[in-house]
Image 1 (cartoon, helix red, strand yellow):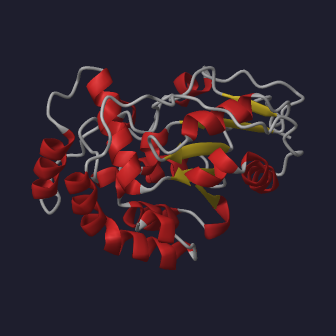
Image 2 (image 1 turned 90 degrees about the horizontal axis):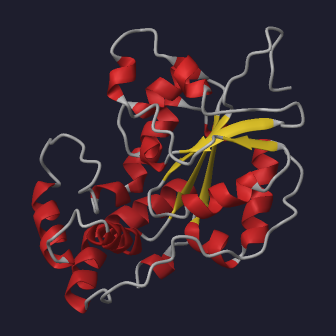
Image 3 (image 1 turned 90 degrees about the vertical axis):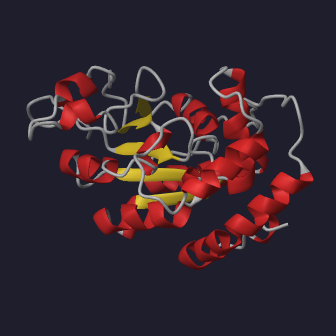
Length: 252
């Protein structure tokens, strides 16, 4: 039952991360499910919009305009991958709906960073080489600086702290963590986890899809890969312990 007695509704799940992790593909699958109402567009950017939260009365009516649920829908959701990264987003989401369910899909942070940089190159918002970009960001990592929506190739890949921030606000049973490579290579198995988590029927269309798969102008260089292998090794090992995952392929 998605409508209350006043015929109002709340969004009850969000795909909240990570950018360049496979959220667009997962969003695509969700839109093909008859029991799922997704937002009219991907990336609503409500809970990371600071101007909406200057008072104690956020304009949820503006948020709800992105949704058009029907009686056949069992769940209502959206995909905005920056929420996982944006420090204030989790508290805001909790204040909106403390019972909401959250889905994150994680990708090897080295691959994620390189994909993110390539996206900004193609958008003509980045002029530096990948090596120059990551060398600059490494120098900034230990500094308390304002969150950067665009130039956060490395920061977004430190998943452990982001997940711990989620779990400080929400119960563990409200969070589903998925692997990018499993959605890409075994979509049926991954989507089965999603349907069980959201308590909806099994997905009918589970064929492999390729969305936003870009041909990079250059390959990830040896120097950059070695630099990032060293940078992310401790993070990947921390993530393995936190999620009880085997991430040996991320370390090679």
